[in-house]
Length: 328
Image (cartoon, rainbow, N blue to C red; front, side, top):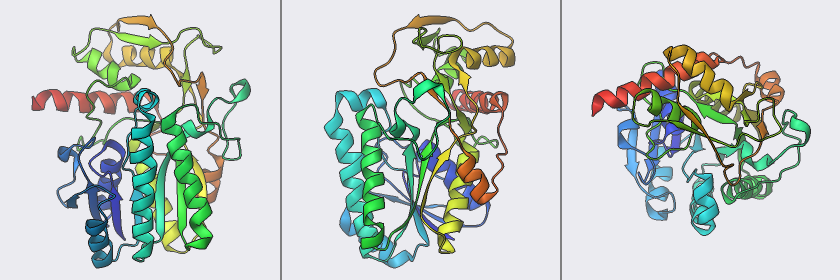
């Protein structure tokens, strides 16, 4: 396949690019490097430094390259920032993406894989697993922009002959087993990234954001999916729509939840050391329980994850953090 990837210098986009290249596919990356990092761009990918709404550049690329499909990862991803600056998130995550999609479709690229979020569901009742049929109730501007773009694809699919796969990510974690990519984020509040920074002595403690939730130990519960399994899901989705498979919406998770305290405890088991923790306030836009019902994707594509193991996820994240340390 010949794949166009937006946001390929980011965490998930770079892993998906690597997985595609490992399988012999051709990859072209468009990224303006506002949040991405050029270090993460695979050497054998073609790289175009551009905003996705730069119509002249996008038209030239799409017309000349004859892509099989586009995977859209580009966008802003910080929930708390989106609450402070919703207009910025609407511009980058919705308005620019819509311009980009319309340019692609006008120039013959009508197969789209979109990286959405489990945040579109908001809070679910009774801490139950979330299925694709559940009501959408985004609780922050970041998730709202994802829902708006989902709706654009759904509503445009018949009018504009768009084939789409919408992938709703749960909590993406871990790093490439060959240590070629991983998260490079300054001032991250991502739990696993912060844990790795504490273990490698860049931070002195983990702040647990909320210890009074109605969960088994008072801390939020999340469904962590290894980034390399998520990359494989994108390739399966691309193969499906390239064979004229139908459009669809799928959850991306393992269907297993771990609390914040359980994740910290597992990292302590790996490092054989105590991690300093401090209870903190709940974060705006956070929810107590987010675990996927992933049966739709598993049964449709006969998918079995390869990295479904919290210990493995944490070890790969820590290995990557050590790589970053060694580069400085």
